[in-house]
Amino acid sequence: MKRFIPFMKSAPTVAVVRLSGAIGTAARGSLSDQSLAPVLEKAFSRGKPDAVALVINSPGGSPVQSSLIGARIRRLADEKEVPVIAFVEDVAASGGYWLAAAADEIYADESSVVGSIGVISAGFGAHVFLARQGIERRVYTAGKSKSMLDPFKPESKEDVTRLKTMLEQIHINFIRHVQKRRGDKIDKNDDLFSGDIWVGQSALEVGLIDGIAHLVPAMKARFGDKVQFRRYGPKRNWMSRFGAQIATDALSGIEERAEFARYGL
Image (cartoon, rainbow, N blue to C red):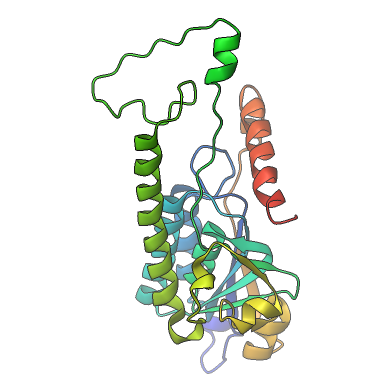
């Protein structure tokens, strides 16, 4: 009501968007550009916030979805002329750090895990097991590379070389994104892009974050004790939790826990 009364100044507002979980498109509840688009649009648009705070807790995931989400954040920040400040909770690694780097400033807890600026592809090979069981796999393709990295076939050097080339290209894109967003803040040491991780103060020393701080006290110190927080997040239909989706979500949950476990979480 205050905003309609002449000469009465409204309290500063900070829109808070939680980005928690693995980044991808397959799992329900995972972070994706499609699911976050309406959330981010509202956060940047409603009531002209003084800042948008991203609360990040993600071990990473899809490089494309990370890029799409990060690009959307930057586009909205530039269009609305609203600063973006990221606060890392447990982890902002790999794609999670890609999202953090989309912010103008990054802060973390003393024990937050940050970094992992690299690209990974992992899988299993089951051709020996099938052979021992007397099972013959039959695959027919049009295009010699159509069955690349088939886990039920012996690994070929050509496929591995092709995969590594793809991973290196994505890695270069990741490095460019971090260099563009962090500028002269980051350490020039090549180890920064080796896929290694840093914790709290160490992350600050190499320039991956701007300080050790938590959301509420940091925003009060910047905007005053009367600052108001408006929290935004994707809405979930509770009916979608039933039926076949339960099995899918359970498997996705296991995969997500495995991603967090890579960082000791």
